[in-house]
Length: 100
Picture 1 (cartoon, rainbow, N blue to C red):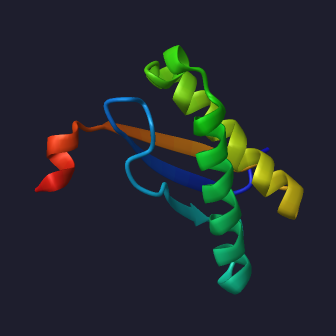
Picture 2 (spheres, rainbow, N blue to C red; picture 1 turned 90 degrees about the vertical axis):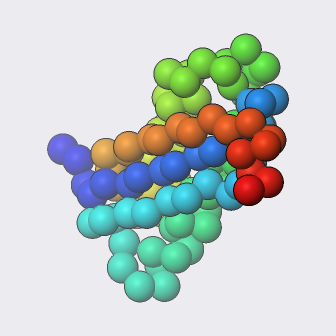
């Protein structure tokens, strides 16, 4: 049984590191201020998870998708006891893409 949906977008640079703060939205997980708390906690969890990934795994989209999904679901479970569906979008950019 799934409880809500969380969508995470991560933008990774050429070195496999986050180029911008993860973008997270949710539906059916939380409302109001507690939703903001969840998104903030989930964002930190995603950042920490990507930082902890090995170099090779950072360049494997399925690995990144899996660990990011697990991270946001873990936060939802610890805060609310819920198991949301997690959609992860990965974008890879070169440094020149960010300068425009």
